[in-house]
Amino acid sequence: MIDTLAIDRWSSTGDSWLHRASAPAKLAAALGIVGALVVSREAAPLGFVYAVLLGVLLTSRLPVLAVLALSLLPVSMSAVFAITRLGTTWESALVIVEKGAITSLTLLLLVSSTPATHLFAVMWRAMPAT
Image 1 (tube, helix red, strand yellow):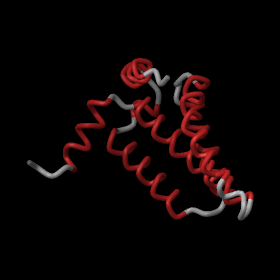
Image 2 (cartoon, one colour):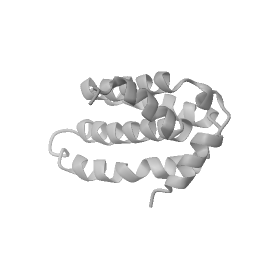
Image 3 (cartoon, one colour):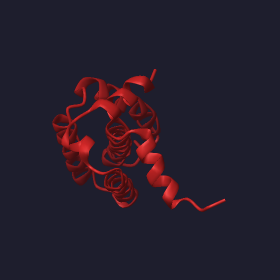
């Protein structure tokens, strides 16, 4: 089960460089990473992106094991889908799993280091008026 209270606590009480970064900058970075995943097809660059995200996690003062455990939950679904790609190449299956891991860790870092009210305030400005 995902502990939303813990994620909320981490986002609102943390004091690291990642927590102090602006919500628009973090949201733009997350969107950029996810957008890059859409066009990426090679395993090695994706491995580098995941390594950079692990570096961000290690320096963010977030609980590393808890965040990694939460980020790996959706990867199991990616792995199931990757099994269907084993008929092509191992690399294509690996790319699917890497994309799931990167997306999950990226968005978990975003919500674990930014209070929800700050994220919604940024998104509110971009939404059309009713």
